[in-house]
Length: 582
Image (cartoon, rainbow, N blue to C red; front, side, top):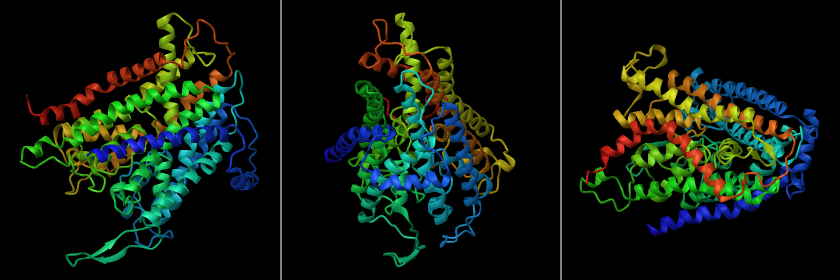
């Protein structure tokens, strides 16, 4: 057990040591300074801009940035729909996987363009190699690049004293993919190939088991997808079992590499902000706030998982290995527990164990990580979500001490506060409304008609739950929370591949992705054109531990007020039912 804990500590410390220099590198990339990758990618970028007739030096305002972002994302959506609904006759389909239905294709396309990667299909049997490579992997790169480019716009707006020029979106997007994502992905994929992760375009292989049965084993270009799914905090797995599958995550080394890969850029983006605006102390305060929240979730999760399941212990089974239901023996309970919180806090959504089998407190902590959605978060958008909380904290702190709310020399006024509050309240609104509707249908065993059909051909809503009472409620709450947080992980007990869940979560995917990007960029754009106010004796200091504590308190209060009743009905009630009375 001590060895497993040591492995977790090594992963976290190694990520931090790599993230600080990577943050400086990212700041140099967005700042237009010379970096070592110029030699390789400058010719590629010049050719791209020449062919596309885009001027990367053309400055844009925040509205132009967002118009371009939405336009190209709409184009990618139609491309993804085409791939998925026609994959049965498109090339690179050696296993003859069928085309997706319209509702499943809609959900999957929405999921991958939004960096969520919610998978209501089973990876190896639900998508062809063409869809996996030219659909999913392409979207995993560009969706991650989109979030990072939006963060770069905010960096730009907060660095200059007064400006309307916020860089070029195409330039930020391309540099995010070529200078940051691609080099790290090549390194991660290379490690996986040498460790035994499959990388081939051949179809299923035939093998004979020890019992003498003939099996057809899926394979494919897995190593490449594993790299970008984690580096870009996407999370969508090539196989249905995701990173619990031995072909996707074969060894403890690959498990460590995948863990570091998914945390690395979210860490580095915080430090990149500090380097870019030349306020490193402020970046460390932000990182410290995120880390305190992360540790408050991960420590009790590890503790409850290594103690084992009390219900199984009552049966006379030793819990020496911890709660191992739904976990891989090559990773153990500790590393799986650490992964479960990291993947939900960071919004990757990949899994190396089945979240549905974790203890209730662990499930609650996963939910809290997604509900706050600003402890590190996804690449780029994690910082944007945190920025909203910073604006709220500055405004509240300024009012509490009788000072004008200011952040980095710019006044925070009604316009910025209204946008920040809309962004802060949208997340719980989407989660709780979706959960309330689905719970109502289940409670009344509603006949959903075309919207839902179970395996027996019945249309009653209760058919989509494989678990009753508290745990079943948690499964529905988790699905909408994961969707709204752009996470993509799920409690596997929910039958989600049907029109009701595909369409409802697809709509939430779109709303929860683009409005929380537009909001922070609009706030930053509004602040950028304001008159710069030099720091004085009346200025609220934001690079202090006191301000960090205020930001953390704002996060906790908003999450507690919004989500505690729902958590009390799900994981908390389940925990009280499984914990022996003293």
